[in-house]
Structure formats: structure tokens, C-alpha cells
Length: 80
Image (tube, rainbow, N blue to C red):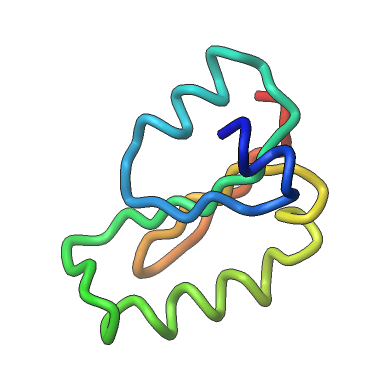
């Protein structure tokens, strides 16, 4: 998380711990794109991830937690 913040990267994960870390730390970054799907194979995630990055670009570059499911996405602006 420190490295991503320092280098202005977005953390991409399927792990729920990153959202928890942001909430507990009240950090303002880095942004996290969290995918919550059963099928995490690249062929399945490709369109979901690309669409989410495009749709939530402004939020992700400003500091947010974006939780993406197959049928919806939720955005929480940092700090949580």
C-alpha cells in the first residue's frame, strides 16, 4: 500500500483485506479497485475491469475504494 501510494498506483485486488486496511487506517490513498466475483480468470474479468476503470477513472485518480461485482459497482471516497 505504501509503495502504491508513493508511486501513484491503483491497487487491483480480489482480497477483501485492502478495503479493511483503508477503513481502519482512514488513509487518503492509494485507490483500490476490488473485484468481487466467483470467476477471477482473466478472460472473464477483462471487460468488467476495463469498464470499471473507464467509468470510475475520476474517483480512482482522486482516492477511492471501488468495489466491482458482476452487476454493479460501489464507490467509497477516501478516507473511509
